[in-house]
Length: 432
Image: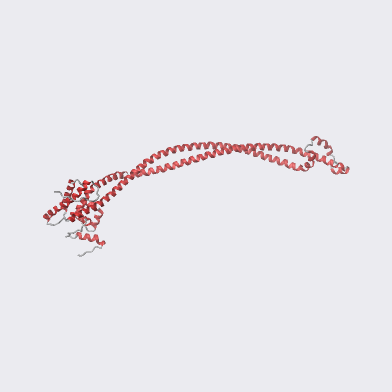
């Protein structure tokens, strides 16, 4: 009748059928070891036993080792998945950046064309404004020359007018600028007389002395006014020319202001277009830089991607095979200690055969030593005095990993030397 074992109340990554097979196989492992204990005694006269506590330790060890290895493999697997995910994200990012860069370069072409068109318009309007400015400058120079000429003529006229002002003021009330050349011509014979003056007139006839003075003032006023009148007329003419020139100047200035306003507007358009173009250039360059960096990363990790993909699949296989691998490793730690190398290998072969029969997955190339201890630790043990052969290393694993206290049969004292060196910094106490 087949033995029934309690269910393993613990999470392991497998189906319920495999999990129940593991429970049953644990019992079978103990039965196989019990059989080999008898056979081992018959061959080597060395007594060894398995007990219910051995079985319980076997279960506890399995749970502890499975948890440790599952966490370790799971962590490595997660790191591989994360690395692959990042590479995929980078690839997607590069593709997206590549599309964005194409669009940005198209926008940049449009912006460059727009900036060139605006620049052409700016150049044309600047040339037009400069032409108007030159024309206005000519008008201004011409008007200024007229103003300068008028200022000279006006100053001369004002000087002469100022000199004649007393006589003008004296005769102005009566003459009002109405004396003629004919009147002055009739007076000239009298005016040329030596005694035709105010002093003589007063001596001869004081009542007509004023008339003498008046006729002299009238003649003098005419002479002065004859020179001043053309100056006045010329001054009026030049002032008319100045007004016309000033009007022309004002009109030209209005045109210049209009052209300058147009130029300012188109310059603002050009500045805006150049700003937009520069922003697109900077954006495109940043996009190109990101894409190049991401591409370089992907290319640099191209070989790693293949290795990580293979490792990720391998980790998945390790997780699947972990059920059987831990079963073999725990069986080794729990039961193989009392046996020599031959029987340890025999037990391992029988256990693997049982796993095959029970359809429990495990790694065909499983290296128990490599699974339970790393090379650095083994090297440290060797420095501490542990021999480097497989049996000694297996014994070291059992001593450090097994859940129960080991009993070392050590006729050559090699184990004793190793333990003393290994534990000398941990407060080891030696009784004998």
